[in-house]
Length: 381
Image (cartoon, rainbow, N blue to C red; front, side, top):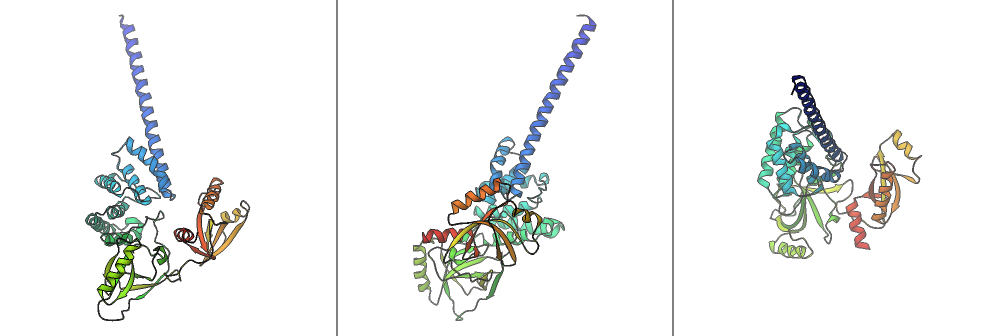
């Protein structure tokens, strides 16, 4: 073959190889970009309080790259928020912990240090209390050593302590992790727990909660007292008995109506029962729901001035109602007896662009939790 022809063949072959290499790189870059676009989509779902909507995306990304600590970490966070597979979430966090220096600060989800908080939650939910305590120690160490830790937000430290200190509680009820990780704005009034005698007093504990609830939560039970300790753990107890035999009889009755984990306690224990809860949001924790209950769709809440965006709602939706709740004014739509009807209306509003619309419940004009409303309506139907 002539030299010139050989050179042309060589150059042509080289150009072909370079072109194929460039096409391959472009395809890989495009595939990588698609991967991280999906990652951002999942992250934004969590940031917008829709952790459940992120799980399918993150599961697909995890299949593609199971060794990526950021994907594993976000998948674990989503699982914990929605209350699924705590053991698996703990393993995902352990993998992320081994690659801690590769974790990113995800806007809307939080800095890498949040890992220790979520590890506490995962270990508590999976019954690994010793590991939860170890994670709390790491959380505390990081909090006090790093000035900018968690953006100076002590809530994660305080809440982490509550979970870790409650982990071995026989009747612990680990509530769903709130998707808005902020301290609940509940006005709680307490008073020192006063005893009628200096002797030991017995009661039957039916639950311990991280966030206070009205006693009507406990279906089939009455006369439940609420106590809170210095760690912020709320314990729910029936009875104030002088003799253990009396408490044993009460325990038998309580277990008989479905509270299999209930157990006898000494309510003069100053460490666990130092304070009585006398009111939640200016109401007795024993207050019951009576009368009519309805569901509404909340669009906005504000204090004094009406936001510009909320003012526009009046031009877009019929039948807006203004409801005063404490120092807030709520804008709501509709009044539904059926929870299913409320869901349909909420979804219609979200399709119209009101993506933050959500369902609220009212009893005789006073706001109550969705759970309490549904429990009450099931009972009276």
